[in-house]
Image 1: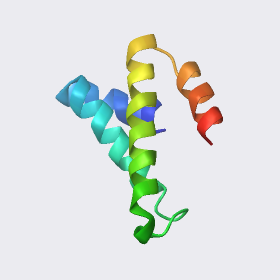
Image 2: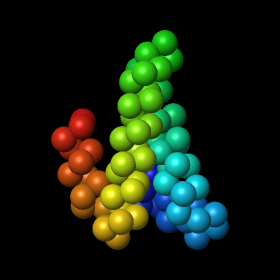
Image 3: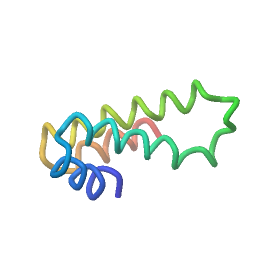
Amino acid sequence: MFRGFLQSLLQERYGRLVAIVGQAGVFALAHLGYYPVSAWPLLLVVFLVGIVTGWLVDRRGTLLPAGIAHGFVG
C-alpha cells in the first residue's frame, strides 16, 4: 500500500524525493500503534526502513526487493 500505491501517486504529482520521504513518513505513522510515542527512536528506525525500501522500489521498479527487506527487518 505505501510503496505500491502511495509512492507511485506521490511520484506522479511531486517527484521521486517527495514520494520516497512521504511514503516513509506515512509508513512510520502507521506503526504508532506498535510502539509508544516515547519510543521515538524506534519510530525513527521505521522511518529509515521506509526510506530504504522506498528507494529499493524506485531503483528496481518492483515491490519484491522491498518486501524481502521488510521481511528481514520485521
